[in-house]
Length: 137
Length: 137
DNA sequence: GCTTACTCTACTAAATCTATAGGTTTATTA
DNA sequence: TAATAAACCTATAGATTTAGTAGAGTAAGC
Image (cartoon, rainbow over all chains, first blue to last red):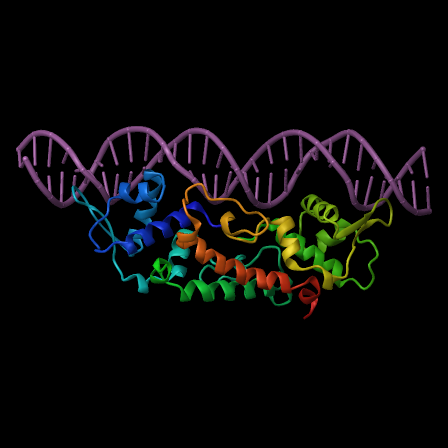
């Protein structure tokens, strides 16, 4: 299941990518347009800013804006920041690898092999899709 | 993330599928071999039995056994029983469809389109992989 | 009728998710 | 320079889910 955090984050990013200019857009404008709680969106945008995808400006006329071209923001990156590992089990994660405590041998684990296939497939989509692809009709 | 319930369920099923005969295997045998809490596995196997994939026998010499040939048990079915929808958002789920409360129009939703692609890919793997495929080395 | 092993209901502890509250900081503008 | 606007930050609360436990009940076999 995709968390609301990630879903809202993606929606907010596409909203910003759809703007004609990259002038700052207020949180409240995004939150109203996309039906997202203002306060919740605040924390999400903050995370994306700290990750370097958004810039912000304080005070009147302030808001958030994209720091990169949408074509340079792969979904995989956004997903990892907001949701965490793309893999369904930590033992097949490339960026967040962890050994399963119950599994003595990954090589012979049936779930492991299956989940590698799922990861490769999902990864292929997430790495090769960028924000720019999402804003096309 | 794959829940432990599903992971344990898949491991238990492959364990049963690897047996030479389909004589009943005690929960405790499976739980020890696969490092799964006995009581937790109990509830998982019960679910799989009620779904028709396992049979059980009570009393001495009792246990669980497969009701179908491993090649007739697609991973997708097991996943849906134990984990729920394969889709990452309910609005792209085939079997558990639900409208998103925040989204006014699915046709123009960028997340929706993306998640349909992910679902199709994952589904393709889960539908075309059976228990029989998992037990091969 | 005793033992074995599955069945079933209910419960709990911990973690995670989805926010919300409320004050702080910074920038603009009148 | 005072007022205002808007992001920044920390903490926390409520709901839900997960993972596992407890313990009594039921059926099968010897």
